[in-house]
Image 1 (cartoon, helix red, strand yellow):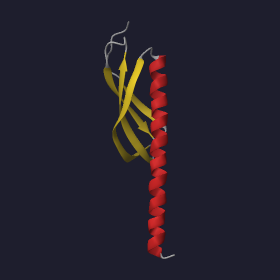
Image 2: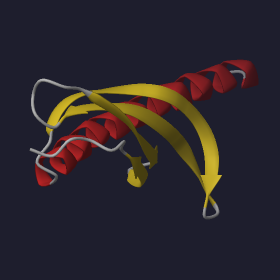
Image 3: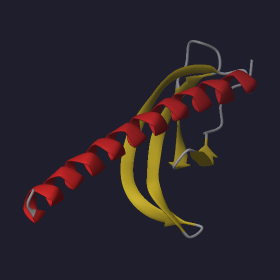
Image 4: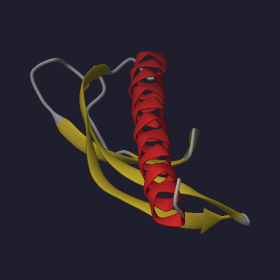
Length: 101
């Protein structure tokens, strides 16, 4: 095994690990958004990834992902907010003012 093939193999392994990491963060985010909407008596409609980048937060380097959260308060209207995650932690939820039934 040459040094070049070892570098290629490690690059592929790192890429696969990061792919699974992003999938895990995505699944956690959907579950968190769904629970958040239930607690606030809102209807969860969808969650879409708006941006993904590697960033430092509190001295830790990890994925910073901003999601677009779509929800409804009455079932006939839709509102769009944002949810910011850093790794498997939600660091910010921004929801617009919505009508309460």
